[in-house]
Image (tube, rainbow over all chains, first blue to last red):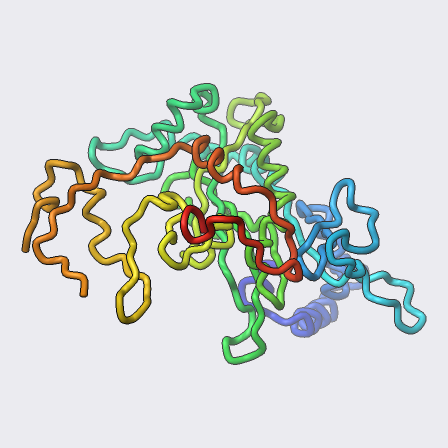
Length: 315
Length: 51
């Protein structure tokens, strides 16, 4: 019933009505849960859970680790929680970050016989020279393997990509709301299943309504800490195909964004002449004389090799 | 008016920096204070040597 509800967008009231009808036709003493809330409570221990971390509404700091007990922001002085109203005793924070820990989700892939066979595909497949069917065929990945031979020696180590972009859960004409899901993808898997939704792990949801801008680094702190831990010391993982434990390490290979989001993730403005975070000041952009706008026209030719015929093209 | 007709490109490709070299360049800019209320923080050379 849970799968049917999520696949077809069934409302909670609709779910409860169907359960009520099913309970009426089942014999007395059945154990079918009476409503959605009871069923969800029963299923909760099976999930991997998530962590709620309080966040300053101005994106100054996370109430995390050594700052977990603070009651107001160290930078702007904004209160952490909303003032209590009425008789309610619940303390509600102004803004919360929901963080889905990545380590147990990666470990689960090695515990299932259906997924574990694909986890070493990136090193076991034999590509054709000159053809790139997977990122593991690329020069960047081969260079990484040569620089970190200890990491690449274990084919079960994970290569990850981080994707984030702005998302408006409401219609574009409704109230503007900037929500930022951060998704990790696994590049050990073959291309056919690499981009399937079940293998793309939602790592955190940065809620709005305002865009965090370059302060997205504050929100990414728990994820970076966990990735650093997975890179340096790894996590002990059970491999069901080999019936043994191994230390799984992970490396963040790529970040994938559109150009405006690239500015936020890299903290390098993608406007004006120095718009490329990688080449920095080494580009040949210029300002149009009358328009005053930045132009990158004809800036690509100096990337060509010295003997290329387009270097000397006069027409 | 800038003319591109007949221009011969003599410059070579800019250097490919490694991750450590990029980190070394960026780490010289100093720290910023995070937060929507901390305003725009620009280091000397903004728009000329860094962005």
